[in-house]
Length: 337
Image (cartoon, rainbow, N blue to C red; front, side, top):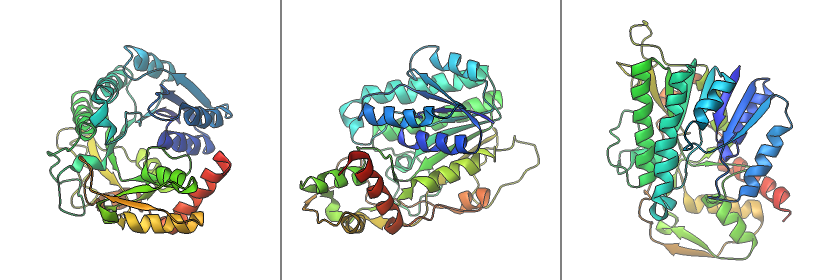
């Protein structure tokens, strides 16, 4: 296949591109190398991908007029996976403009590019933060998502809406998926596991919110990529094609070839238990400073996995006791500590 992936210098985009290349597919990677976190880490990811002759790199910003239109037109992909975004729940309180530009304007540019150059399947990365103030667990794709707690979450909900509208208007088979706390080798430095590892090894205290009682549905990167890869082969049918729901609670749109899917394992873990596992992997103890939950954070996340299982036959299963040591091994090797 010819696959166009945005955000290939990012954590998830890098891993997806590497898997696709390993399978023998041609990948065009589009990334703007923003300085939200260490650009050197992003360059290192892309350098690893560039060693494969089937990888083509396009360095440009999502919000630059015409950049995505030209890149998609040149690549002529069969599948587009839109992973690039301004990430981070808390950072959206500091720099809201970055979310408007990348996540709103950038996503609008992406769907316009796909409208001009139709593909077999368009896939869009959303977030579990879209569930916002919803307190019913597990989070089901059919739950109302009308109470976003941050601009980041709101921008991703807007992206889902844009995707659905273009799917309806132009018949683009589209799958939006909501990620749940992804971690693993080559991870993002702004995420808790990465931050905690750096500080523990440096002998610095870590801030633990909600007394460590907050729960997250941690998803190991290889499991996440396997789920995305499975969904790539399951484009939603067009209304009237005769294909029924994959299971009760399927989110197939009645007016568009569009579906929304959670990607998570459905096994939430307390943050203090995650830190316990990290301490074991590092062979070091953390000095924990307990703090209240910050604005925009939620006490618990848990994915309903029924739809994902029905579509691809499985769900993320790697436990923290295996995933965290794998991350620590990568971290020590990459940073030489």
